[in-house]
Structures are given as structure tokens and as C-alpha cells.
Length: 95
Image 1: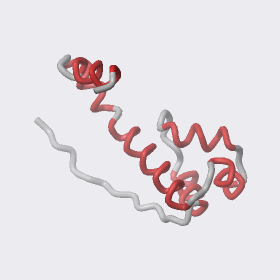
Image 2 (image 1 turned 120 degrees about the vertical axis):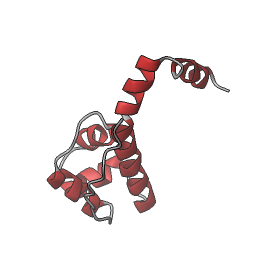
Image 3 (image 1 turned 135 degrees about the vertical axis):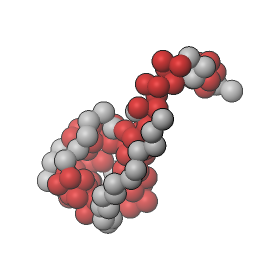
């Protein structure tokens, strides 16, 4: 097991860390989905940027998951990588 994985495993035992980690799950999931779609399309960030009429750093920021992109931006990205966007509302599990 790598050192990073050991650290994360240890940190996950901390309730505060676990709560904050889970809060970021949506961002990580979105970032993984974007990168996976681009990879399936066989495109580089620069190629996607050109199709979107933007810059490679803008695509990198979009794929980082640090910010919530607009729906319009997601549509442009999806079109550039040959995909569509599906917005889904799901119930939140409460206590």
C-alpha cells in the first residue's frame, strides 16, 4: 500500500475528516466523469479546448472538480467529447 493510501486510511478514522471527505464526493465524481469521457473520446485537453472555443487551462480547471461548472459549460464539454448531459435530482438521505 502506498504512503498516501495509508494516510487516507488513517484519516478516514477521524469523523471530521470523513465528513469533509464525503462532502467532496460530488466534485470528485464529476471530475472523474469528465476525464473518463475525454479519455474515451481519445482527446487531449487542448483538443477539447479547441472544440469548446476556450483554452486548455480552462479545461484543466473544469476537470479539476474544484468549481461547479455552469450547465452551459457542461453541455459544451459534453458535445466536444461526443456525449450528452443528463441532469438528475435524487432524494437526499436524512438522519
